[in-house]
Image 1 (tube, rainbow, N blue to C red):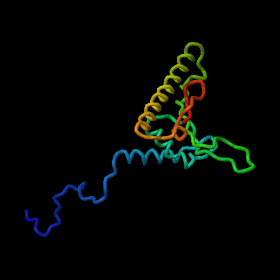
Image 2 (cartoon, rainbow, N blue to C red):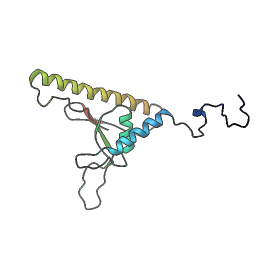
Image 3 (cartoon, rainbow, N blue to C red):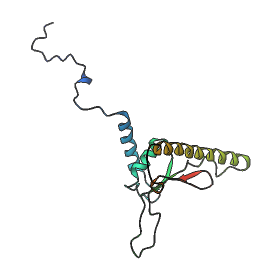
Image 4 (cartoon, rainbow, N blue to C red):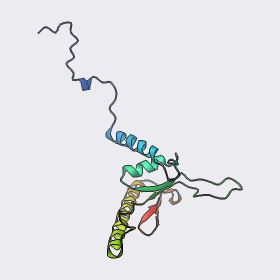
Length: 156
């Protein structure tokens, strides 16, 4: 076989591209950000731009967010509506059948729900501890969380 003058390329086709290959983490982040961009609340409002990356980071790390806000400061003369700082609520979805359950079954489902939420609290504590381990950050500038509801959900 004479290959002279042909445009034979000995490189496999996947090596021909000059575009840089994105790291897997970046691909995962972009996909999750696209999902977050589609989230709406019961009023049809999308996730606030100022908290969008935080919600994405929580979801990427396996947390179940149920609400969030970038924070709103009341203008002079207006009543404060909402919290003046950004927050995200982490709460596992209510177990299926909880509303209809009674007695021991209801207690079992509530217990499972609380455990799921407490596991998320433990994971958040661990991540925040690791994050602040080698940082000198004033206490009033650190991320903190408070428990909400009766089943172990929390607000960061």
